[in-house]
Image (cartoon, rainbow, N blue to C red; front, side, top):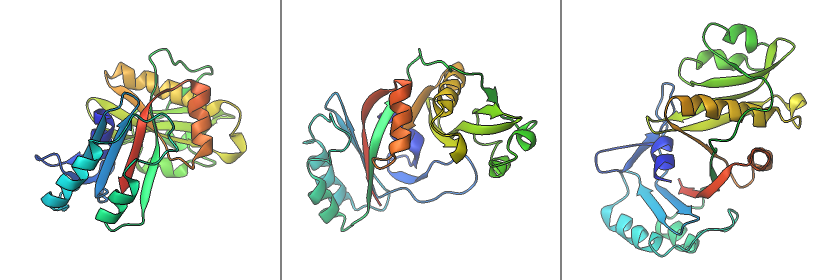
Amino acid sequence: MKMHVEAMFTHDRNMRLRAINEPWPGEPPAPRFFLGRTIEGSALCRFRYDVPETLARQLEELCADEPVVRDFQTKPKHFEAYMNLLQSERFTMGPCYLIPDTTLPAMEVVSVTRENVTELARGGFEWLASDIDYAQPCIALVREGRAVSICRSVRITSRAHEAGLETLEEFRGKGYAAAVVAGWARAVRNMKAAPLYSTLCDNLSSQRVARKSGLSFYGVNFTIV
């Protein structure tokens, strides 16, 4: 969970959140509050740099009382208190997975680079050309000479990468997403980093990929913006 939060957001020297850690140019602001609950029972919390210290300490005390998480649909024990203290109605929540070392692609996949992106991205992934240099590794499954499913690094640190997964609508449900996730994870492991995969509670298609791929569920992230 520590690798996850540090991949997702940039931090200052006091470990306060600064921005969303996108590899391409631009720094969207981080959420004001992050809570990561794990299946071991530990809870990790981080606060944005502009959250007052007194409020941060109140939130931290509540975090320390969070129980073991077993179902990623279960809201935090102190959900209402977090929302009230931060005077917010907007939150996100979703499961976090580690992609096991044994996960290998069941189909042939290829790396997408600056050299081949124009050819592979035609017919649905043209936007990929603008950030291909930043979102590496990028792995694709190719049909009829073009990419139909891609998985790339969308949050990057030296210790961990977070997966960003896209499959063209007409090619979904064929196992292509699981193949590119596995191929991407292999490329990330070759870089001596941990391949992480997270999604939102309402993203059912992404959760199906996680189940089909046998990913290792380790916790739930929760943020308040």
